[in-house]
Image (tube, helix red, strand yellow):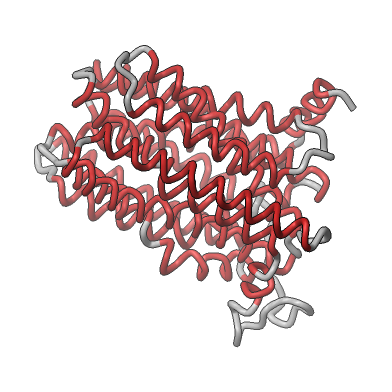
Amino acid sequence: MSALSTLRESLGLLFTRRFGTFWFASLLSSIGTWAQQVAEPWLLLSLGASSFVIGLDSFAMNAPVWALTLVGGVLADRSDRRKVIALFQSIQLLCPTVIVVLLLTHSISTWVVVVLSVVVGVTDALSMPSFASIVPSLVTREQIDRGLALNSTQFNLSRILGPALAGVLMASVGAVACFALSAASYLPFIGVALWILPARVASPGTRGGPSWRHPFVGLKDIVAQPGARAALLTVLITAVFCSQLSTFIPVLVRDAFHADASSFSLTVGAFGLGGLLGALTQMSLPARVDRRTVSAVFAIVFGVALVLVSYSPWFWAVPVLQVVAGAAMTLSNTSANASLQSAASATLLGQTVSLYMLALRGGMSVGSLVTGAVVDLIGVRSALLLDGVAAIALQVALVVWWKRRRSQTPDAV
């Protein structure tokens, strides 16, 4: 099958009732989320926050996965995912609503924003495994890779549309409009979660799966697979080091290039454009292509892009490199996620996804806190350069280990 035919068949999923409705509702929700993602760090900077506080805000949003995402995986395997998603998304909706009220009453403070980020982080940790394991329940096992890639296209399309809309709103109305948009965007997705997504209540006695008494027993089986370990480590390294490009790009834009919020929105949108191109490329890859190899190669490309961004003397080069970085991140993470979910048993799908989220979001939390402190010490350019060099070195070492393992055990998965 040609790449064009593969892409056409993948896009056909958008015209199915359940997946298509889920995809469009997710797009609307993600647009609001990205509008807030642009407005929040700029709001913190306008309130006088340091680079460390910017990193702390990202840490607050991502750190709860270390304690709660495995619990979220059990919820995904054992509960009705529709109700889990609807409950925690409803709680999240309150957070941008509170910020809107505080901005309108001129009562906003840096630490209120950080505390609300903790609330978002806790609800995300508990609900994201349910959210991320929905795609396999809407498509066949053979379509999982394409379904995940399509889901990545909506996320990255929103990463273009959300920042672009945020730039217009911030310039015309102010940051409050971005938070209001974020709050409103939760409503269609909550409605879809209750209406179109499949109900699922697993039996506690599901044969071959973990019991309620030992809810995490399946984790050992997942990480025992060399391929799963390699995929998770690839995602973890990228999250700890390379994801800091997204967290600290507003600091780089302001301090290194002395640019404004519109320029920041441009760089975020460029990253989203790259992610969209990466997702379309992912959907065009033949089934015979090894997703583990794709993940490793583009993880290294992401590190190289980060190094080049860190010391680019020209602002115009930053959006270009952001396109490369966005494409590399999407191809690497989506390929790793597809290889994990395709190999997962139905009874352990939620916990497999929770491990992926733990590597992704947990890695981001540690990286953002450490990089924030380093930025305050040596500057944003040097900190991002160190992150990029460390990412490249560790990813190359991981590839060498994986190749050696495959040569010793050809059937390792």
